[in-house]
Length: 272
Image (cartoon, rainbow, N blue to C red; front, side, top):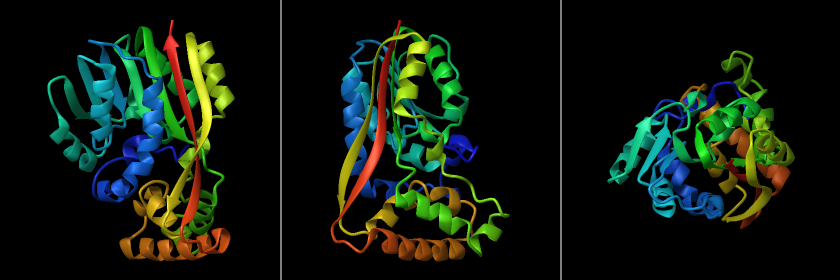
């Protein structure tokens, strides 16, 4: 998944992250959250951390489901955290932090990461660090996108290699972070290696009915295109979007509505 910039990309204005743009598809983005949450067993009185909490709305749902005494949401986006702070309550708090640097020791009963770990490199090592942060019997729950082969991603990478965008990014456009996501079976193997006695790993396709093919562009503007938005001047980024939209129409066709098939990996494990 990885342009080697980790989740330090997830900051506020000036770095491409826009909570309002991201929330345009809040209902669609919530579907895998609920499926992941269903795998997590309540731990009344436990300690929970949500890595990449965003605006905190779903972190509050996690806190209630687990019946935790203390839940901490972590994100690097100042814009996201500004909204999250309004959801703070007894036992639920939010703080800035780079989840790529997360390294706790036997502190948490649940480590939860919904659509955030794709921004962190080296998932083989990452899972070891997360396992280290769990108390005995602790649970790890992760959801990551696995759709790097979809035209919404591949076309963006192709356009980034064209003039004038490539030159504006000093000849090295950042790569698609989703390419760093492991195969589902490799996650299962790694969980077993790390002593997760119980586990559940699956690849799931989520079907999103968007109003048109062009809505795919609006979706990706708040995800995979963020890496280009942070590097290109505003006017050039708009030029990038125009070319990307036209090219994507040529590949996907012009449909209204458009069925956006989105692959994701959900994994859960309980540490022995």
